[in-house]
Image (tube, rainbow, N blue to C red; front, side, top):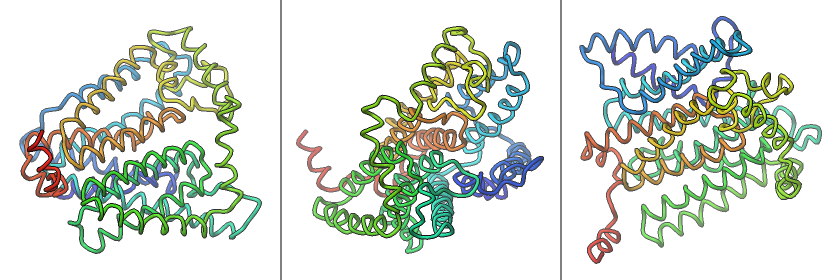
Length: 407
C-alpha cells in the first residue's frame, strides 16, 4: 500500500502546476484535489500499516499552528461562510507538507519529486502555447495567453518556479529523456511566461534565469559554463522571437512606466485599502478569506501581496507564524550544500518575489516548495552519502577543492 501512496504522491505533485486546467466542478474539484483526497485515503492506512509515523519537524508543527489559527478565526470573522470555505481549502493545500515528509524516504525520492514537478510545469507550458496557437498566430485582439482555467499571473509564477528545477536536473546523471525534459523546459518555459504578458512574472523569470545561469558555471569548468550559455541564449531568443507577439512584448515593456507612475496596475490602491483594514484589527485580523470585505474592495479583487493578505485576514499572530515558516525554510536551505543549496535558494528567492505582487499563501505550489526544502534538509542530515550519490553535483569540482585547500 505504501507503494501505491508513493505513486499517488508523484501524480499529485505532477498535477499541481496545471490543476486548474482540469476542473470537474462540485463536488469533485480540480485534478490535484481529487488525487490529493485519494492520496490521503491511501497514505494514512499505509502509514499505520508500516507501524511508524515519522516524527514531525518544525515545518510541520508551524504549518499546523498557522492552519489552526486561521480555523479559529471563524469565531470572529465577518464572513463565516467564506472562512469555512478557506479553511477547507487550506487543509487541502497544506497537507502536502505532511505527505512528502511522511512518504518520501530517500534522495532518489527527492529527485523523482523534482522530475514530477518539472513534468507538470511542462504540461502548463504546453497548455499555454496551445491557447496561443488556438487564438491564431499574429492575432491583435488578444495579447495575454494562458492555459484554460488559469490566471495569467499565477501561470507565470508557476512556470518561473519550474526554471530552477529544470536547470538543477541538468547535472549529467539524467538519461536522454530526463535531459530533454530539463533542457527543453528552459526555452519553452521562458516563452510561455512571456505569452502570459505578466510583468511581475517576467521580472521574476529574470531572477530565476540568473540562478539557472549560476548552476552550470558552478557545476562545470568556466569554459564549459560559457559554452552552455552561448548555446542556450540563441535558442531561447529564437523561440521567443518566433512565438511571442510584439503586442505582448509591448505590455511587458511597460514595466518602467508602471514603476514611474507608482501605480503598479492599481495594486498600490489595494495595498493601501488593505493596510487600513489591518489597522482596525491588528492582532487577530478579520478572519480567513475576509480580505475583500474588510478592505471594502470588489469581489473580484485580491490582495496582490502575501504579507498584506496575511495581516488583514490573520493579523500579527498569523504573520509571525508565516514568517517563522519562511525563516525555518531559509535555515533548512543553508543546511544543504552545493548545487542543491543554490537551486533551493533560487526557488525561495523566486517565491519571495512572487509573494510581493501575488497572494501565494493559498497556492499548493507554495507548500510543495516548503515541503521539498524540509525534505532536503532531513536527507542532508540523515543520508548525506546517499544524497551525494543521487545528486553528484553536490560534490565540489576539483577547482573548488583546490581552492578550499588554500583557504
